[in-house]
Image (cartoon, rainbow, N blue to C red; front, side, top):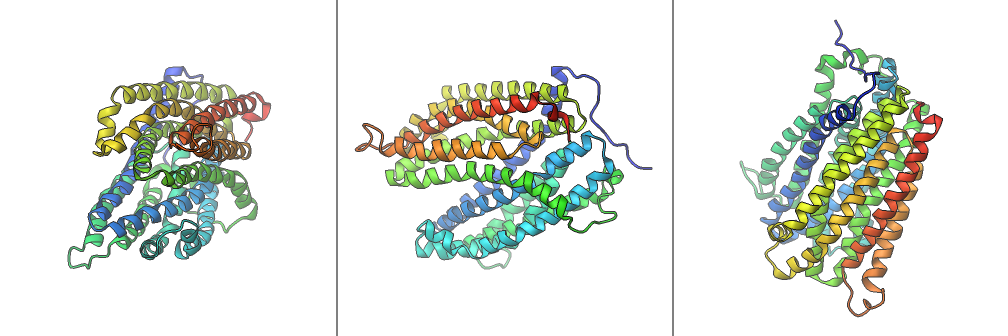
Length: 463
């Protein structure tokens, strides 16, 4: 007998019920994201104990790798609202084919991704990477290229599983992957169990291996979990269908570019800040790390909002979708504001955890105030952007992201840091954070306006 399909309820829900559903979905996603971040931290620690050149290679290589992967993964996130709409509309027969087309798209996107990772010369030249570091970086990126198809296939499963409201499997797989990567990377980098020490390339090989492990776990979970049998995920396997692939690309390319714009803006800020000296760069890095950690919370809740809004829109229940946005926005802003207050109160011991250098601490402490303000408005725009994805609105948000994060945060930050009155002779990294605050305030207003327009129109409930 097939397992029952758990569709969204059609009865009205209270704010407490919606909040409970959001937390139920968000906390496993949050844990999974933090575990993924810990892999990057582990790579830094492991290669840092091996050698400076290898540490630099992993730092540069991981930046390139993450930028490429996040761009492609962002495109594949189109699977989430697509499946969520089918699920909400109870189109059971459409769910399996949607996943299959997502897998085909992942394989197609892997081809240009592998080419960029295997031949990164022009990217390294643009960054003026020293020759000795560039060689090790190429080896690291070539190793990661072998795991790129697995990353994209797994992230397709990731989006699909989220869309059906089953994120706990993602948390467990992330735990398996992280607990495998750390000892494996250490053994490959330093040499253990009879293996020769490989340095930076060891982290790349380990990354590729655990990516295939993650995809294998996801595939086994899909094949053996009885709850997925009604969807017939692997039955009547379809060939690539142009119309379905184009629909995913139309929805996903703006999502991928939005993600790339946000990631690249912070990467470029770090490069521009290098002119200000090691202390300024290190202080900015401390604050950026804190911002990234805090961001994981609103991102996890926003992913849950995307799924619930998509399901409600698919079910043609606009009132439920609006209630989800309202409750999710309030919860996210309240939690991030609380974290901001706690960070401000404990800023000195928190910053001390990241650096023992008094000069670096001074720079970081001077920037903490900007984080506390920035994160609140960034939470608003993150929730609004993901809610819009739940409504399958992605093109205009991409333009708004480009305006705010490239046009104001990056270009405006460069002017404030180096050319604003009084800073021509005394440039400061604070200029970038001042512009980032302005950019997120504007983004929260623009995204909020666009979301209100979308929620009020009759098409908001259509699939």
